[in-house]
Image (cartoon, rainbow, N blue to C red; front, top):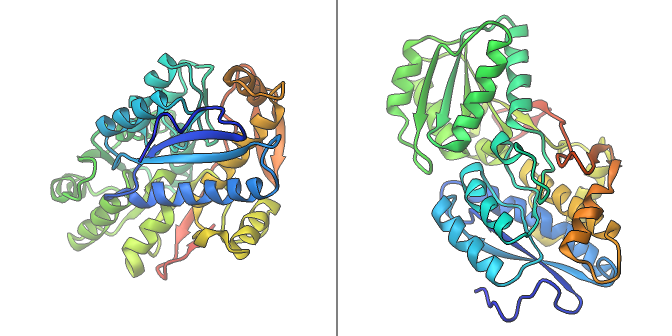
Length: 362
């Protein structure tokens, strides 16, 4: 439970962050895993004395990936005077929260979404770790067209997230004088995909770009194949790669997902070695996957901004200055860049593929 009098932005030796995310429902693994990764880093940092002697803590509230519940949670968190809003999960929920953060002049840090609507117009309070959906869909379309697969359909969630992914895909196709051969939707938090499968299968696309969460995307893949579709499936990172792999099992073989953080499975980068080492030390039973890795990196980014904030008693304005002072850096091989006029830390994107045995290959 959230106790407003007990949770202050600067409570002696604590910096308290507020997170509204899906911790139950069809998108629950996204919130659970992101939070676990962030807590892994903050727990490690706190064990070393925190930042300037201040521990970083997260108050988490469940919104079930529903914008109205997210807005209610955000109002509670702001009333409790949390220092910043952190790690919100999803486009429709983040779009409901950002205006409240702006009204409360509270930083909004590392939302788990690549929607351009949260990045444009530029807002001094909002900081993003990850590349945009435009970056991801441009990579997907480039890969497909390079393979000679030009008949591309889009299956998307019927909300702002789905529209953001559809817009990115359409833009990338238009640059090649192409357009989607079919589009169809699914409602948020639903797996009712029958109508979408019928619409898209009728167009006989070479590939389907999916812009939804793991439950509905898995349901779509199974139903489309059962109805005779033999093409390929491409997803953006928000799907929740490991959750999708777990949901599909052997049916996941060949499904492609774009990623915006380094692989958590291969220790080829120092950041992954650091991540896996902390998990190996106990790590609060964190599952190494792309969602928990993004939470880990987001926590690392927040802490870096806090370190660079001027003065002993950090204010929100000082934290914003600290974030903007990060400049170009490498977090163990993951390049980031932030400045006064650019609050998007990374534009990294690459493709991975599910192997059908619950694993992911990059």
